[in-house]
Length: 488
Image (cartoon, rainbow, N blue to C red; front, side, top):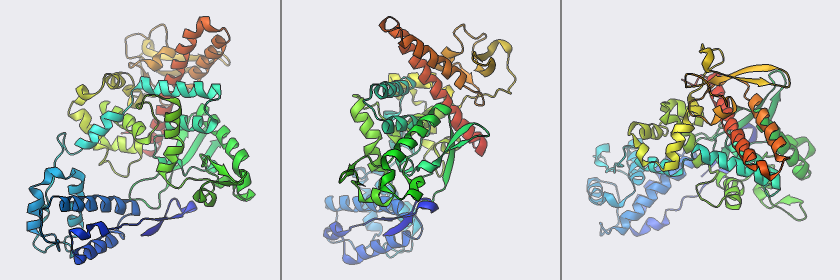
């Protein structure tokens, strides 16, 4: 099967192959032809990615059924006897395999694959121990990062980049990954022209293809990003154009991938990948992109497996923290750009079932310290008590900015810088937090010049810098939700 995929301005042909020949040992030719016909009919309803997922799960189930030796003769049709037999062995089959099998009947009950007297309740199911999303909950809890881990990853990336052991491509991607939580297939499709700067608002924006399952013609979504990230991505764009523009026509430079394939051959005259050569440096799939960027960063710069930039890790981190702050599945879906809130209900289940005790010690810290920064935003226009207001002053121009509110009765003496690492802080999403970022950066620059005697202060300031960036990134996502009406 094949189809055109991607945004309308950069369509490409994607092909999948489904091979059912391994099922000949337990099923008749008529059965396999009917299964093939079912998958072809489904092709008119969903994308190739969905077809592939359904086919893999159904085929895996049918293969396992052969191994159980429940049937002495090849199976010709799905009937009541067949379903009763596999129900007796349902613990041997994965819940998702049974779920896809049942869904196939629900979607096409009159297909010749099924006997005429069947109903949906005849199909066996296996319920997870932790509710409907049990298996997914386990994956979420195993992968999500805490605030300290996020700060450590960003600080390590800063240090490695400063030493020259991390290149600009990896460094800029790492910071984008912690600012915009999208899928690898979305990152790989970003073009150099997708980064824009609005002179009127003095803001940076990046347009990213919203890669969702079941969507063959996705739209591009506009994300507002903070100035430091915007400047960094501008450098990445300049670097990509300088290094790879000779590989494409001069009038098509804007189509270059912002994070292109990294290997050239034949005296740097072409990319190593034919797909990249045909698609302006873009990589063929999300998995290939992850191997070249997120996974490559983890392998080279982090020894512990939990310190990584994989899309699922970052998205699980944000989704779970949102749920613990009381966010609905709809809100989480809006932030993570899911096509529906069904998947996001797993995050809500974590909170509803009181599963804090299942979290690791580091994860528990995350919910206490990092969660409020994700959703508990206020506005500069909200009424607040004067003694609780957190104010920042820009000494270069005298600007006074109301950046947030303290959860205690009176703000502490170390405000505002220490606030960004405090779980009581309620930041303003519409404040200019760059004031405090610039203050900390000046401290880092000044103390670094003083040498080792004040290194501990440099490290402390660097941690404060990462905490401020986290809040700025979260504020950008909240601002996007406000603009789109998805923040309630």
